[in-house]
Length: 356
Image 1 (cartoon, rainbow, N blue to C red):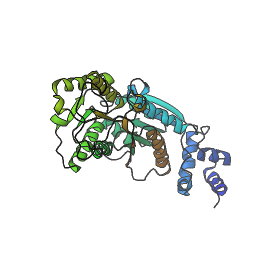
Image 2: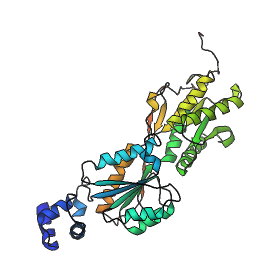
Image 3: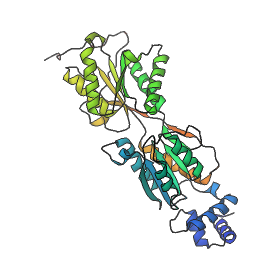
């Protein structure tokens, strides 16, 4: 049966005009909610939705919930760019995008319900919202909802997120493959996603048959700022003898890594000649540092794009099984990590260069 005949059949069954049916199936905004519901119900009965192009978004309004800092590039560049990628993915469609700030935990449930119960709120995306009560409400409301970089512990809401554990494992494994055995990690463990990265780092140590000790191999930062990275690294250098320094630092963020590099340089240590530095981040700032950082780039812009695609699939197949799409990162090799040849000891820490 041709596409045109299907539209005609839907129009006959619903009592709506062919043009109205066509606008609804094209995701146009100039249709009533009642007409849209009738068309979508009939289209599902006729099996039309299964054959529709995945790029056609079947809604007119979307609400994005995220922590307040996500709406300010200077406060959280990662989430800010995720929101921008959602905007770009929706650009070809006539979709009204609304925003609402929620706390990551202990969120304002009344505010969430007020936004979601708005007649024009057809679907939602939750970015970094960990509150299980909000997840319960989203599931009970029955409107399509996709989580970004968070998870529903009761496995009802679909989600897309970086594969944080594998990111940590791959980054640590790269340093081991480059010949580094004395690797120190610096992470901000403010959220379970960072704990997953630490678990991945531990996996890499286990695979290399080396014991991992928090006391010997982990520095914990309270934030992701360059100032914090420099302060934590400076304190570590002041209390650690030169012979016990690591040959490489694995840092959980570009800003943190910039602070680490600054602390090393102020101490007279060279990157990477004395100590290599590698970052795990999605801020995409590694290339512009004084020492361009080797980094395992966390997927960022891809999160918004894939979330829109996942939302479309929920609209087409609302009863399909829900799950989490885990995105891989990308290793970018620059100048901040050096290779230690097998059987060679690492460069001794020196205060001066060869010709200084």
